[in-house]
Length: 496
Image 1: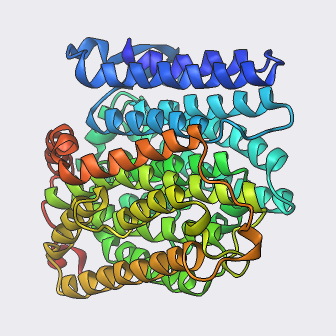
Image 2: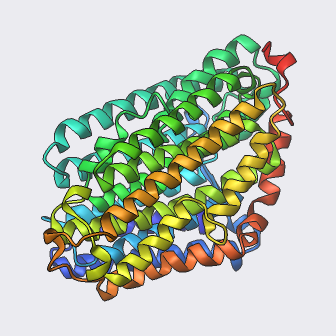
Image 3: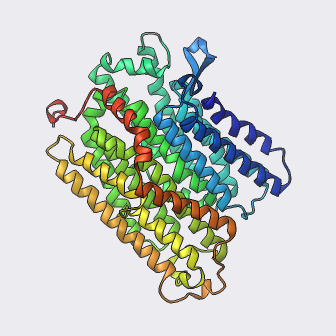
């Protein structure tokens, strides 16, 4: 029942939004929908313990062997909670933003929320594909109708990348379904293929799924759509893309790729890990040279997700705990950074360093909030980013490979560079000589203060007590290792 409601509430409220013509009523309705979704998500974690209320299986496309199978497991609980919190924060922070045909904008945002929940909950591969595409369609219209000057070309590139990745995934899903004993799309039937699929099949199937998930995260070299899309999209949509939708790719790796194609994942791990590390350092070096706040946040997201990808393929319990914790924390932190970027852009019309400076003199409250969020972004101890990154580094150090030390050094280099470009951004925008562009700059309003205050509260609470999330994900991490039946990637098996 809980799992069904998490999909149904944003779907029904989203469809209803298209018929509300008053701008204020649309905002109230959308915020109400996000609050109800958040309440249901929290009840699925703390109040409802009976498993039968956390999953649902019904008839769907029986002729194809597909069912409407959804389940709120530990990772689903974590990502649904993150998404519900994220939407509440987005709608609160952007309360005063004005959109043409706001009923269409908020309706599409809520439909995207429904699609995201479906992806996190799907336990049937064809159902996963259905919700995967459901998230793409409304986001395409959000970006193309309410984006920046180059929105059409940029959105088309985003659509092509994502759609081609989805087609590759669909081909892989159909092939795997044909090999299952019961010819179904059930995740359990897919897991059973781990011991029956040959090494050759696993090798090429791995890339069909990995490319689809790598585009969504995105991972080098499938990332080129991301910076421009983040910059040109309306910032509310960018928050969804950057803080929430990238988790679809990571979920795909953790739930659908590595456990199903564990031999293929093992074979190609020493290709994927270097690609992710190249992307981490490459994105960080570019961010060091940029003059635009929004682009820096976009490349920062590439770097953080790349590190999580490396930790997934480290294939040990400590690394997986770090990934799950950091998935949640990254979502909170990056949404907080986009909030501040949106506030600055709305007041000044720019996010370029060369046109900003000395903002702390005009907006001290905003400066305090942004400094704390930035420190969390670079994983300073006592912020929420620290524990997750520490666990991931510990897990990467435990990779049974002659290259484990090089992997760790490369990952650490990316983190050091991340601190450099983040602190440079803080200094250029908020400190130094006061720019004429910000001479009439207003500090944060009440709704903005509430949203940023909640972000900072989560940063500090989870920084001091990350165990709250680790308790949720501990059993899932153990089950992940059991499913892939590989505690470590052995060089003797991969031929490296």
